[in-house]
Picture: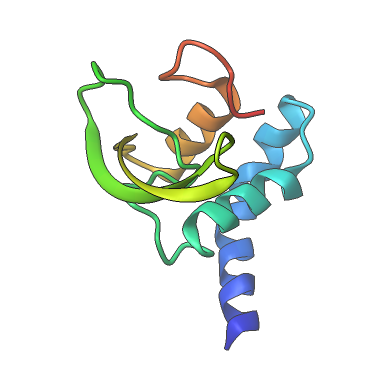
Length: 109
């Protein structure tokens, strides 16, 4: 069953990732791995945000969710509420990940 989940995720998203990864000179398996990690292989993709892209305070299309973040001062994970971008489709999520759109800089790669 678990292998099926991996195969379905790969078959659905890799064909979209591969050409854009090539254009950006990034290993497509790295991008697929980040999306898989952030969403639990698609099971927990909130509002098509496949890469955990946060929203700024002024961002209009955002949602609030409880998440865990690593605190480097305490060296522990802490629970926080944070805003993340609502994204209309996987392709747009991928594009935002590759370009850093929404943050004003490329923080993702």
